[in-house]
Image (cartoon, rainbow, N blue to C red):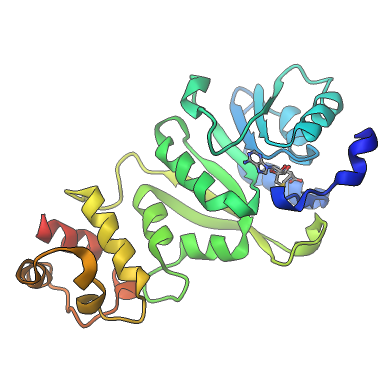
Length: 264
Ligand code: SAM
């Protein structure tokens, strides 16, 4: 990286580099790689994971926003003809433009891990699986079940579209600089059809957002602002067999679906 070394890490780009080889080995083992597959990596950083992937699969596509790191990676991985380093923003990148299916394996930049995950889930028809290193708190949120404090609208969104599980816990000492939080790797496997049948997805997610926006309130109160005539909402609670004095955070995905389907 020559002169640019002094400029690292760039905090605003979420640069906490993995330095623990045993974590890389664990990720590679969990990934169960196929030599004929293509892997997409977001935020390769200094390439610790990229290198291990390049040795094992047909093609690695790595998206890195930091131009200096792109230059470093091209040198560092020059011996691999199966690696493409693309200087781009993972948020605006055209994933469908790659015109093939790929798994995603990444230690994500944490400051945008949720928007990246949402974006990838929107492209789920071309992504059979993702193994994502996230901050532990986000991993807990997306795997959380009703009634647990971490359960929120992002849990509902991710679980509506995929199976999600924590497959590896990683302590903060595995990174340099050492971040303030621990991490976890999650396996996200998109479903061929959403987990529950929803007649109007916009309405479903609107209800979910309102239900969690005012977590301490009952559903009767938190859904007041949603612009649905009170009588219709009252009927919907009855049809869906949901007690309006419950809090939104206690509802399962099926119950959210029942409620929104009763309003449609
Ligand atoms: N994968 C490397 C590792 O494990 O050591 C680096 C991980 S570091 C947590 C996140 C990486 O994402 C950094 O290299 C950072 O420059 C890059 N990054 C940050 N924002 C990005 C974006 N919007 N698009 C693509 N890469 C980004």
